[in-house]
Image (cartoon, rainbow over all chains, first blue to last red; front, side, top):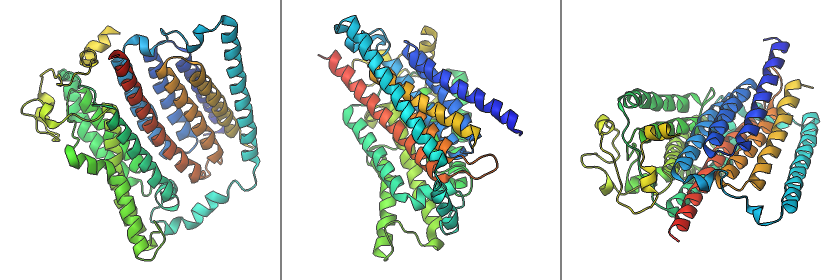
Length: 363
Length: 95
């Protein structure tokens, strides 16, 4: 592609990004804000593909736009409109109008100043003579990393500590979500069209997750993208009215959630016992060990993201509708048409049990 | 000096400022959360712009890995914040 065409693409993408961000933040309607934010995430993914960051583009499309959007939409749907949309009076309405304007201008000026400082720092980074030092270190050691995709090499080998701690952050977040209350009640079972789509989509998503995990060693992909794709399968099943959505129950679920951190620690500590540094893989075994950790990480990430979408501790199996096997991804569960109400007393349940289609018509 | 660097990098700076302004000024929890997420996306855009080396050249993989980590941490933080908001709303309703 010649430079003029690229420049036109760049200008269009940047313009779309800025206007979508501004629109998402300016609108008073929470639902519209979330949908514009998802559109922003998708354009961002295109921009990153343009900037030769396909790994990040995949993750942004699946997680930043897809799953964040699903989480936010579920929250919009559940909570009463007054609590989330701009109907509420701003915090500073108690004060007089002059103070409010002053506050707004102060914050705006602060943000403009921050953007200016960031832009200045950015020009320094662009001009820096040593900016290629890390990239050169990565390419010099790539052969010994066990994988040929440099991003996977950085994530799972050179900076494996960061990824271990990132999985610990995920684990902490899911424990926090568990502690805050029970999961949302399920959606009403889907109609025949969505039901049919689900039956095709879920196996394709699971297959795509396996592919992304495997291909991450030498091409764009990896545990994060694969985990997000697997979680998307869970979200689709949830929207189709499933309750257990393929998640294991009880202790098995706890093991799956902790699997990423646990596998990292087992590998790291075993290497320590064998006289190597913590997470310092021997080059001959690096590829296998990375794949092992990535498999566990994918399952943990997928389970975490699905639990995040459920919004709380899953209900015990006894609440499941009769005949449904807990944890099984069976087609018969997709076919069940019963409208499901859990037995807990959360006052939002009546609100959130309204069917997805019904909801779409309402708005 | 690359044009793409500048375009995307400066757009990233602006998006950070836009998101931060909403996160600080907006009253509604959900829109504050979206503001924080937009702000994070701006930071990621700046990092990816820094990693870019021009057409046909391999970009720096280290910022890419940082952003990948950041995206996952951002979604888990958002999920925790939404769970907190949900609990807050439930506490308010029950008195």
